[in-house]
Length: 310
Image (cartoon, one colour):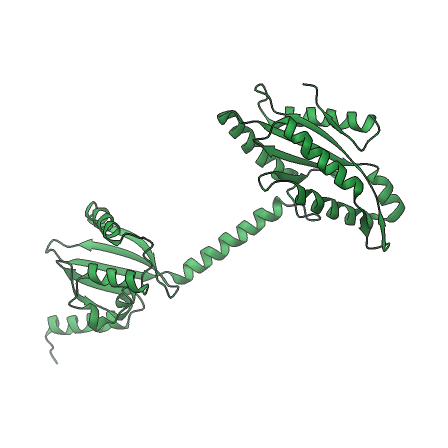
């Protein structure tokens, strides 16, 4: 039994492409000569409407109707011109595209010697979903690694990373950078008298109180048991002292609820202040001066704010 090999192979190829989960298109002088249904989906239209149309007009209709390929631009003509330039620079170009229905394709575009352009796309939707899930999982792990699990604020690890970044910005742009160190007065007595659950209640409420006072740009971190720091970008020591006094006053006036004891208690906080100077190469020097000021506040009777002398 003999068959016309050329005709049978062409028919076999077209049938295979029609059934393929991937997308395929051939065009000449911008006119689509053939495409399968999945490629027509990129234009948000049918195969019958796509064949015989200019691919640029099909893309324009997809952009106007917001169906098919996601074209994120306010100026389609500039977008399509830039796309042509990018493709013209390479005989074979590869890129990824996503559709409004959530699918992703890895596209390959090749211009043959005869002048025809062939575009082939592999469905990578599941790969993209897996990649996104991994990125979100890694982000969550990173967040956990940088978050104090009791209070939900930044931990010491995060503080060191953030502080390094803020010192670099302060150095480069000559912006002021201040730091507060805060220590709850006689915190051990709360644990000893009421238990560690009560101490946890106090730490969480203290964190919430501070978070409600500081600016969005300020960074609150828990670096020890009852020890906290607040980084104050673009802030001089005068403004830092006003903030510290506001926190100290609010803590002294507040009543902290102990759920395990069903009672409220009062407490105070001591605060040290330091501002970065031009000779400080890292946050360590700033933190050391703030700690010295904090110890001074403790030694002077607690429930007060002290500023480093240097």
